[in-house]
Image (cartoon, rainbow, N blue to C red; front, side, top):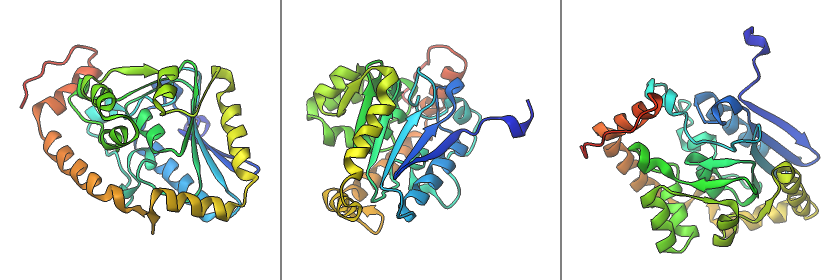
Length: 266
């Protein structure tokens, strides 16, 4: 297959005042690499600047996975993960890319690791009844460094959040809804339609009022959220130390080699 016929890793389309951003790597369970990060980030920039975009819906291609998180095979190869000069966008060009337009995650399947972090950073979440959420990074020698550690603790009761963080276990969509992580749970083939219906309920309202309400609710000022800045600094410091460890290299390597990791606590 020639390069000009390869499907792009991210699809962006418009439906009235809604921008739909689709992670389009179903063969890799929509795992995020450098190109995905760049294209999603550019789509959010476009959405923020375009007065005709009032809501953004992000979803995944296929019926198996919303997003499996970071592309650990790319990590194991040592590939760059963030576009130069755009590091502030965060994982997938999304998780610390604060925009005024409401965002809805249409979670069409498994949303583990970074997939859950995308959901945590979205304003609303519609999940397929086949979806699962979890932060399994501790099983790979890394941490939920895309905001998951502090956002899960902020959005759930502390004891529940700590159990999920420290075990790396996942929960199904119904459980996630019961915990308040999800707004709607619908059959898998209805998830995007339900997300668009929710978006339509938002777009009947005055867009500037909606955007101002979001900025006030989240404390967004000049593209930043002051209440999260200290958490991001701590997050970055912990990642810097952890990623220099032997275990952080062993986890992705073991994943790529399809074997159980051997931890050394160093």
